[in-house]
Every structure is written in C-alpha cells, then in structure tokens.
Image (cartoon, rainbow, N blue to C red; front, top):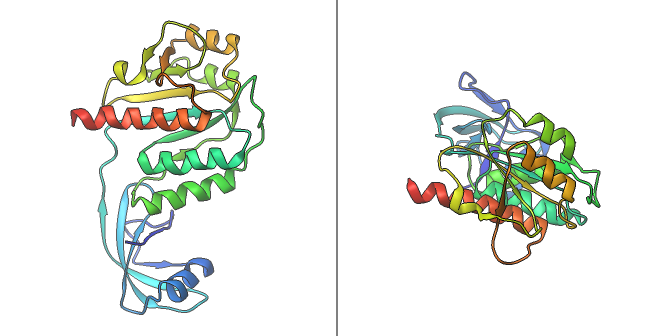
Amino acid sequence: MNLFYNKNITTTDTQVLFDKEESRHIGKVLRKQEGDILDLTNGTGYFFKARLIVVTPKQCVAEIVSSEIRPQMPYHLHLAVAPTKLNDRFEWFLEKATEIGISEITPVICDHSERKVIRPERYEKIIVSAMKQSVKAYLPVLNPAVSYDSFINSEINSDTQKFIAHCEDDDKQALKSILKPQQAVLVLIGPEGDFSTSEIKKALDVGYKPVSLGESRLRTETAAIVACHSVAFVNEDIS
C-alpha cells in the first residue's frame, strides 16, 4: 500500500492536487493511470481514497471518493531528546519512533550537548516518510528545539507522567514497571555525555521520576527507542 500525505485535505474537499514531485512519483515511478485509486492521509487522523482523473508528469489530480477517521493511540507519548552529535543517529530515532508510535518530539539542548543546531525541515521530511511507510493516520508533532531549562520550566504544571532517564547511580525503577497505561507520558533522554548533575536535580525538583531503561548503557538514540517501545508495550499489554 502506497500512502500519500497532504496536510490540507479535509472531509469537505472533492479533489486533491499533487505537486510536481509527487505527480512524477505517481505517474513515472508507480505507473498509475487515470481511474486508479490512491490512499491518502492528512496526518490528523483521516484516511482518504481518491480516484485519479488527471495523470501528467507535472501535476496529477484525483477526486476524493471516501474518507474515514482512525482512532488515536490510547496514550500520548512525548519524548524530549537531546540531538545527537551525528545527525543521522537522531534521524534514525525519528524514523523508528514514528513507526513504533509517538505523539510529540522535542529536541532539547542540554549542558553536555555537542549538537546545538538542528535541521527541522529535514526532520519533518523523515517523520512524514516514516508515517507513510508505516501507514499511520497521525503525524507526530515536531516541536522547535529548546534549552533544557526552558523545557523543564514549561512543563512544571503538567499532569503528564514525567520521567528522566539518566546514567548516574541513583535509586531508579525500570520505566516499564511504573508506567501507567492509557495516559500521557513524557520522557527526558539526555545527550551522549548524559544530563549534568544539576539538570537531573532540576528535573527531580519539579516532579520527574528517575528511571532505568535496562542494564546496558545505551546511546541517546537507542535509549529513546527503548523508551518509545516500553510505552507502546505497556499499552498493548493491557488492551
């Protein structure tokens, strides 16, 4: 199944126009013809079926024949992750987290962060591609990069389950053992050099619980995926 994405489609629309890049993909790569049915999503929960009525290399046009709303995940997962030194590792995390199931992502710049500038346009493309590949109806939200202090302060009054995964010796419980299913979850994942001691204290002072993601010391992107899968697993286990 090839899923196409157009954020502007609504249930009241009767037609959808594809840009030059997607039109070329439809006609030249997929070899679709007039009358063929395409599957589309707007990333906000709707799947559409549309019949091609015009197929040219510069622009394809399809008429919408049906739409349906898909249910959201039974939980809201927000991962706040420090960008990795090697950009392709963070991009790998974005792709896999989208495939597993995630609601919101915030790149957080920490004391030990080696990368402090991100490429949001590139990240958005990766998330969209992963959503299409895994046939999901909801596009995860990619928030702007923020400083650690700004993020912590903005979340003080949140009712979300809040966790910080760090490597310091501490009294930590396994994330999957204390997660409450079917609720909102926020997990902080630090940079390659881990969170600083002061950052950990700030998080604990505003209600974050320290958690372990296993016995091994994990890379940032691996830790983020383990956290993502743990939340998905706990929710699947009780459904």
